[in-house]
Amino acid sequence: MGKSYERIDGRLRAFIEAQHIFFTATAPLDGDGTVNLSPKGLNGSFAVLNELTVAYLDFAGSNAETIAHLRENGRITLMWCAFEGPPNIVRVHGRGEPVFRDDARWAGLMGYFPDIDPAVHGLRAIIVVTAEKIRDTCGYAVPFMSYGQDRPLHASRFARETDESLDGYFQKKEHVATSIDGLPGLPLPLPPLPSTAQHRS
Image (cartoon, rainbow, N blue to C red; front, side, top):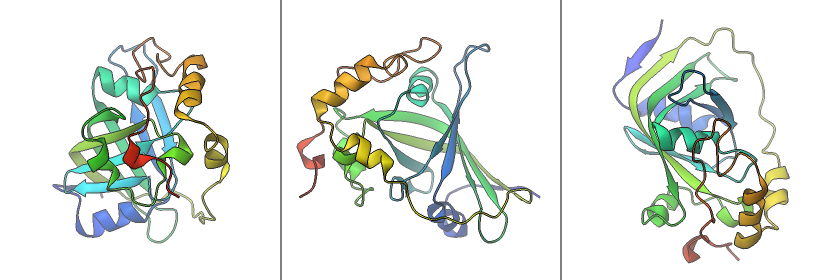
């Protein structure tokens, strides 16, 4: 039986923070628009900010559907599955906002992700989500799967990019500045990373 929660704390928070992957779902307001579902990984790129607020890092990629949908309507659902241990699925339904590099909140939010070097991964936004509904379900049909390690490919691909070349990469991609359905996506030109978030020596 599913259960609803008023906040993200205790065992619920511990479960969420222990997972190596989660999924995000967003959609445009247009009923004919494209629903987007994305897997999110990389240890250290997700954080619980308080009992009703979570955040994750949005890295360089070929599309920016989540950003576009959040800029239009803010709706988002996050989901975690137990691939090890007791079966469980947790969903956080809420309102999300992309915080971009030139936002005054950037430095404070980056403090929640001390193990991530943003310059290595081409970090373009921090997605902040305020929970409106929190639920879990049984997850009996979710298979057992073991975590090996994070893939090094994302870091090896984007570590060589400067702010300028990363902006050029985004400018060339069809669905970064604009979503599949024509909604505004990542604002370009890409602002430089704040000096406090540059590559650590």
